[in-house]
Length: 448
Image 1 (tube, rainbow, N blue to C red):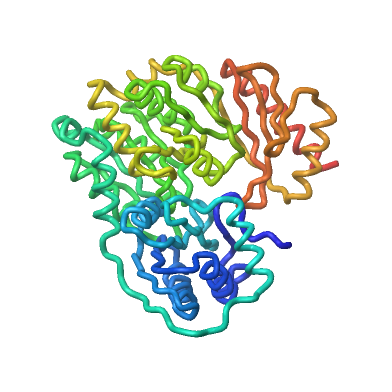
Image 2 (image 1 turned 45 degrees about the horizontal axis):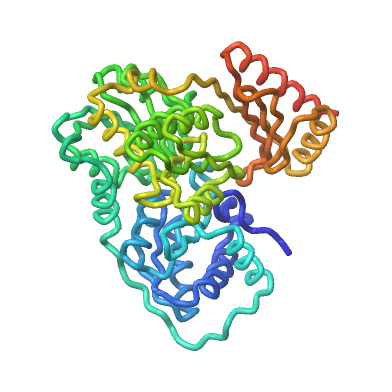
């Protein structure tokens, strides 16, 4: 059987492999999977998203299912509204952080969380069999205007918003020309923050700095924080489910560091909790968890793996090293705005700065890079590294462990034709040496 789903939904270049015919057939398959409506449909700011939404709604209606179109919203807002407003499922049209020519579809279960890997396989089976029910009745398409207000009020209910409001924080927002432009400024206003915005105009070409926030492209956020003496800065990706922090001095934090900060704050409030994170996250989370008699569960890379593990484990926290943070009491999905609210809650509760809070977490040195290669080339690299090393884990790509605080991991991306390389070390020098050594190794393997 063929494969449609990658690490996070179904994605492709619009007009090439991701055609309107493909979208139509995939939606018919989703209609068979969902069985009943209504289905909530939303989309990000990509140029092809409105067109794709029309096809999705038409295909759902042709299958006899009612749906409501929520318009341009962040992915976590659609996910939360699917659960809170009691829909049978959701369809988010987004390619997240992929380049502008891409688009994608992310199905959401009625519990407001991305569907499981098992359900992805069921949908793929339906799609490739192409045996959809015969047309019998036409469903209706309506509008859903409550998504953002539901989303923002849900986030506010999880934090001490009155205390946050009393602090009158200054927040610098790099909205990345993406979907959080419709909700993050509203949340900040309701939390009494003074905001400073860049890349606030929604644009599917992501002209400001690209759709993925990385330390290399956030220099304007750094300048904005310093110029306005902001309490913190935050940058979102294209569909608003991930966020990268800047401290009060304008220094950009890795996703691991911000996750450790928020985990420390939440575990203090809720000790003996469970945290779910991926194999490529920092080992410092185990050190932090032990302070409150909490436990860490590791999964393969991917928000679906983390989200779906959080539910049966009743985990308080889930996170990825890329800035995807999940708060179980709100929804078991990555959520850029919830992450922002938790950071403000931490600062208000402790009467501190991000710089102060960084002193409280275990020291960690992590890095990541990527190289262009297809899946076959990635398999070749993994096999060669397997032969060269003894202590490795093949659960997701290959993770080579030198000791508790020193490791390197190489895995093929599930969304792009690249391999990602991650590393952690007990010092900055050793981290640089490890990354340099393995980048050279992998490049030479590709050349051989």
